[in-house]
Structure formats: C-alpha cells, structure tokens
Length: 353
Image (cartoon, rainbow, N blue to C red; front, side):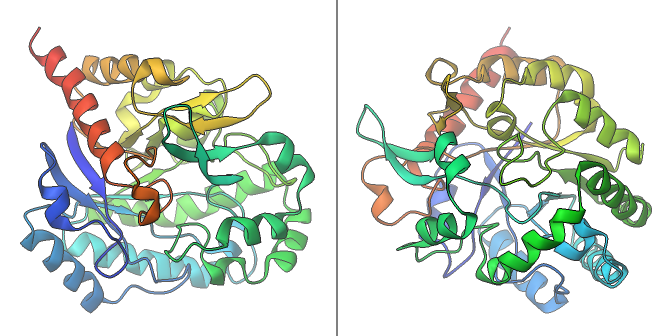
C-alpha cells in the first residue's frame, strides 16, 4: 500500500508540502492542474512545472486526480471525438513524465453533492453534510448558490465554467438515461484504454457521490453489480477503479465484499467514513470504523489480505481545531493526517501478525 495525500497546488491550497512532509508514511502527492477546464489540453510546461515542485519536496507524482471528462463525452454529442482526442494527448503527456494512475469520474453535471459544508457535530467539529429531503425539494441552481457562497477556494466538480450553463446542460440530459450513459462511457473507454495500455498509465473511475440518482440525473457507478458491469465494458487491467469508501458508503454497500470481488482492478482507493441516517442523510465522520457506517478496519483488512500494492489516500475529513476558517471544505490538514495514522496503524498491526 502506497500512502498519498491530495494537494491543490501552490497558491491554491493553504496546506503546504512542508506540512504534508511531516505526516509519517506519505510517499506521493495526488495532484492536478486545477485551473484547467474539462476539454482543455494540459501543456507539457505546466505538467513539468508541477512535477518539479512536488518532486523537489520529496514526493512522487504517480497519481493525478483528476483529468475531467468533458460533458459532451458523457452526453455522446458529435463533438465528443474532438474532446476524447484532447484527453488522450493529455494522458500521453502525463505518462511521459511518470504518472501511473489517473482518477476520473463519469458523473453528469456534478462531481459530488452536499447540502451543507460545515455541519456542526456533537464534538464541536464540523463536516460536509448531505440532507436528502433538502435535495428532493431544492432547485439545483439554488443549491449551487448556497454551496458556493463565501467559499473562496476552488472546489473540484463545482468549477464556475462547468456550472455556467447549468440550465442548458440539464435540458440535454433529458435525452440521456442511465443506459445511454453506459453506452457513452463504453465509447470513451474503447477510445482511451488501448492508449493507456500502450503508455502504461492506468485509469481509475471514481464512484458516483452520492451513490444514488439526484435531480433526475442518471448515476451508474453506484454498487457492486454496476462496478462489475463497468469493468466488463472494456475488460482490460488498465480499465480500473478509484474505489471511494465514502461515496459507496453513502448507500448501503458492502465495501469489503466489493474489494473481494474486484481487488485486482483497484488502482487507487480513498479511505474515509460517513455516518448514514435512516432518513437518507449522511455526514462525513472521522476515519475510525466505530464513528461511521463504513467498517474501515475491515476495508483495510481486506486490502491487506490481497497484499494490495496500489495507492491510497485519506479522504474527506472533519474540520477540527478551527481549521474551517481557512481550509478547503472537506480537505483540512488535521483530520486527514489523523486518518493516515489510523490507516497505517491498522496496516502495521496486520503486518506484525
């Protein structure tokens, strides 16, 4: 297991590489060019500049999260081939500098959805929160205005350029049900995976977050059966998963069972916990198994059973010790650092037996 930490880049993250360096066990930085919009070609100069910054700090650049997929590809519009060609060239450039895994998703419109960024918890910390009844009643444009208010940092999946034409995009998805989305995903994979095999760069799709339909939009990477179907679309080891415990944990998925089924296709895993409520709400919790609905200990035990050699990172943590005043929502320093020590503590204990 190779431990990594997501970082948003110089000038775009209050957390520094020097801060991350002090977390034991972190080998790599999960990075991206966060100002690049879906459909734009990543320049070699920008890629090399980011590589130098990260490697000079003593980390590897093996994992990129994400190279965003243009909406025209998801919708299967005539323009998709142009954007797939650009995507493929970006993958070639990333492989050339040593990137091993690219995490991406195929979620329509939104990468992830929450109704509150700083929901207070019983211990005084706060965390990302999803209130299902509010989602059922709220207009998506109103939600965007609510979530984006007073947030000065970039939030992946909520980029202004992506959301600028929201009404038009929703109208387009009226003609795109889940089967059409499956078809468009297969078309995309059939174009890119042969190039990935040629360049030795693995793709890991991220599950939909949350793992159920919202706003009438199709969601397909949501459970074990759909993950197995996805892997068969292009049955090639370069077509794999970025398994996210929190995304799948937003619904009643047995994540250790999923790992048992598809462990050889997991290239990257996000270990986090969420606490689900009977009414469909959920909140991000600490990484401890007893604090949420995901048995994170069993997740780690199952990975260990298969001698997992891929990449892992702690995912969304709570905001603790006042860091909500400066941290990106869900991506503070302290709870993710605690999460790493919890994950490595379980792993080290298993190694000692």
